[in-house]
Image (cartoon, rainbow, N blue to C red; front, side):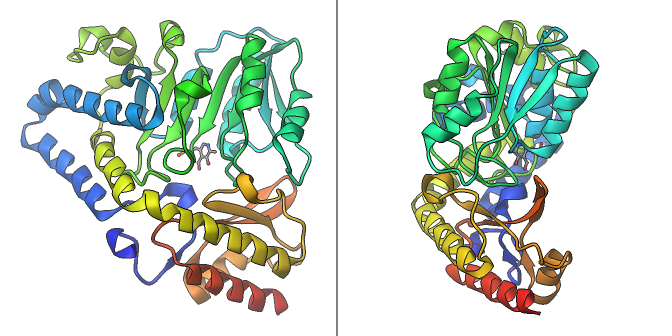
Length: 377
Ligand SMILES: Cc1ncc(COP(=O)(O)O)c(C=O)c1O
């Protein structure tokens, strides 16, 4: 499958999770939209753009189980989440509950806002290894208090690469009138998702990661009821502009000044690519990740952070032995052209392996051999 992607042929790319990788046909479609714009910029921005954005929103909505008018394209999850945060009307002393596994940049966004507004940002620890949904729920439940007003939770975590069974936590929060925001940056085209079935207030996802869209394609789902109070961070023409959209919400968010929206318009092609080439092959990727998980257990002789199984998909994070030299990442790249991320999380270092359809099982074996040699030295 590697020939379908633009990735350098000589590298072993085991880090799809960070920024994805774009297939050639998707990238060509992205460039097609950029050329269309430049042929007649005024006509493009006033006449062509909005119906095309609608088509693109419709394809994402069908893919992820929601309504096209509940979706707004954003460049990345950070801006989408920041846009929710700045709309929250919380009082000093109120609490936002999240897990201790949230994405670092977003923890920072919440902490900065929390400090400025005297809102407590609670990071709930979970006992490890993660073994079942009940333990996950019971642990997480300890973080709720009468002051919890917002739940912010990853559906798949970043540094720890875990699929969280979020349904019970979500139902509990909803029953208690808590605003629910799910960070699904790693979810679209990685695990099945139906946003309406999930029933959260907000859902954020990246489309350039596992769906393999062009960089800078992400979305924010906002449940209809919440659209009344969601205002954009950047005000532009809104209802006084060219967007014929059916709601002020769409008009306010879609036009945020002149910008390149070609990545958003290439999403239907990315979905088609996923359906034609990725869907059936991703089972193989998950099997290879399980293989890596078992091999790392033997190689590192360290307990994993979950029992594997449904906790891992096309990514696995494994704690590195304490003695691992600090230059591991550089050594893997310089000597083997292996791109794989090493993260610090909770006072420990982790290696996170991603498997996408362009990877082979032999990529994992090359990594394991390199790790074995390196750790022996
Ligand atoms: C779980 C999670 N949330 C949010 C993000 C934010 O992505 P970005 O930095 O592109 O906004 C990431 C990025 O990898 C992530 O892994």
